[in-house]
Amino acid sequence: MSPAGPSPAESAPDGPFPAESAPAESAPAEPAPEGGARGPGDRGRPERPVQATGRTGRGQEWLLREAAASDIDRLVELEDLAFGEEAWSREMVAAELGGPDRRYFVVQAGGRVEGYAGLFLGWDVAEVMTIAVAPDWRGRGLGRALMEGILAEAALAGRRRVILEVAEGSEAAVGLYRWLGFEPIGRRRAYYQPSGRDALVMRLDLPG
Image 1 (spheres, rainbow, N blue to C red):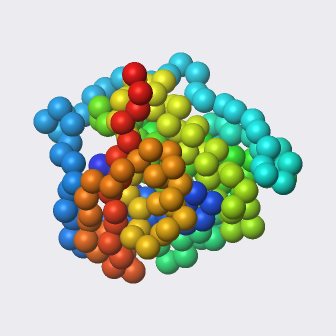
Image 2 (cartoon, rainbow, N blue to C red):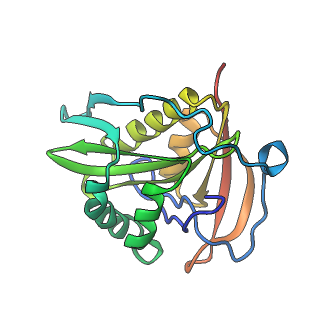
């Protein structure tokens, strides 16, 4: 899903959905905006990132905040738990956290980070890079909190459209994205490697 980044794996609303992988055969569903020209690294970057708090359906408190370098060990653990053989390496995670035009967020619950998600803001169209929630915390609303947080960040950055890829057959993830207003616009064949699964491309037009 990233124009130039590592190959994200899979993650879901409250379970895995592949956000990116080097495609064996890519069938772009949407061209690069504005003729493919990238904007400056800080173009439209909010001065203050989104932060939010809430409670799960079971009454457990959660906190959404911007990811920090000190989170990397836990993010690598979440990658392995969520994506297995398609997980990003530690080097890839570090490159994403420190990369230009990237915004990464974590959600803390029960005293530690239990999910994270990333957004690419280098184009006029924002891209969801990845989203992952620890298996024990799926189904409690943390995935929705992450998605709502990065969509708010995209809006603060002045973006009016967001795209993502999700593995076909990931019904829980697709259901969440449809609930948020995303619509399917295309398919990328054998997008996720090494599994060879296809990706469904989805798009959301933000209000404003």
